[in-house]
Image (cartoon, rainbow, N blue to C red; front, side, top):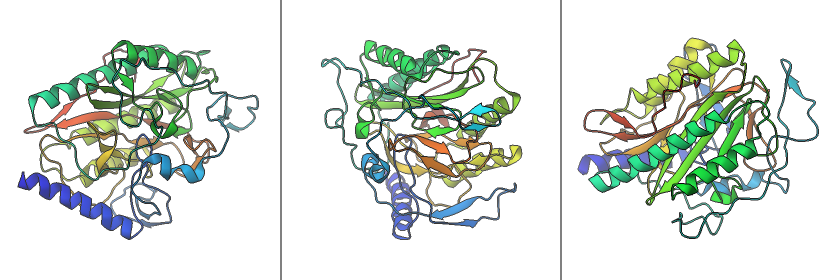
Length: 379
């Protein structure tokens, strides 16, 4: 217990120190570390891309507050009537039509924010599954999230809208007696995030039809038996270019390299260092403003898990439950937020991919609570 408290204090102290200095901090669905104000190159990045520590301006709060400054009155989404911007012959995303939120039966237990639409404040505390009951609940939530994620992947085909994927995901989750965690978290209007092509994260399902050659990240979180299971995977739509396939493959490789680091007393910074090493090998950028996080009874908590090379203090402890969710970019990591306050896209339209697992630190390693299925058609 003393060692556990020490690990928490180190991470909590370091995060608060970063905040006092204008560094680090969390935000929506996969936590956002806030607006970059300055960057300094670190010497341990092998590629021509800089590995940065960065100054930010934010406070710990629910991501509803953190993105409110960006949020306008327009509805989010990807489809739309005007599709004229292109990147390497690919039509870039435009805001589309978002259908009303779907209903959840009153009989299904729901998280505290479900009725209010307000995201709870970020908690510094680590989350643990130290007893059999908590471990089994986390396993069940993770397994359901993984099944829903891979079922959603079977729906990815040219002509299918992301709104149709949202409806199918929503139905599968409530049929299992669970609540779709993104729904009404900070007023997020849908039950899943669908991030297509240049969308880094938090894409809102809408009326845009998937196109042959798209890649799409489907981010599923379920609230089951009082705990959240959180996972994502990037899927191919039809005939995808070799460049896109390499990006997606490298992103999964980066996640797997990071997961291999996880064991009691492993340094948190080595997770980001492992991801950076894979990204550098392929010449990709690592998104820095969105991070992994603790997960359990609370959707988002400490530790803040940065995916780029870093020297931040903090260690992992037995029983911790948290996510690793790297996002790699085939181009600049500079980003642009849509007026919906959620959708984050690469500023230059470059492709981006993401993979995510919920993890449990075991006696001598790690248990993946959201394992990927063996469908040979999936990345």
